[in-house]
Length: 162
Image 1 (cartoon, helix red, strand yellow):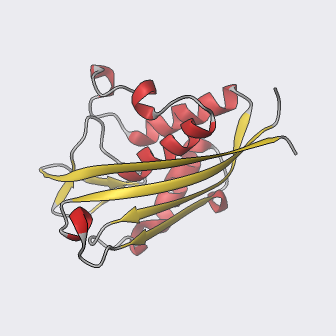
Image 2 (cartoon, one colour; image 1 turned 120 degrees about the vertical axis):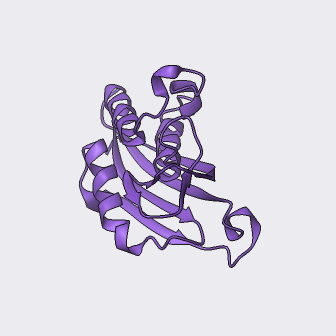
């Protein structure tokens, strides 16, 4: 077994009318999407930050600044693919990832497997290496008031070569 590293990620985006809601690379039917420079996929952003953290590369804002017009409206799944390539170039592979969406609505269960497939595909790993869960805050805080969505992620990475 090679060098093991963990990384954690967290992201938040506010709801914004007139945008599609993209979570885990899947467009989920809802009255509003999320505000952001890219497609604002809060779940993928948290996962990317966890991987980038394990690599000790800073955060996704460093790699993909929201001031760069090249990333305006870009698919977060494409950015995740690039993060996966960065990890591979450093000799790391994803052993496991677990993610949590924090939101009141919409319900995530009908889209969970598609999200897992999208994220696993972008990273070139088996679907069973990606976990997706969702929880509510029982009406408390900004997610409880349905003002936005938060996401957490944790990853375990292995470096197989120096």
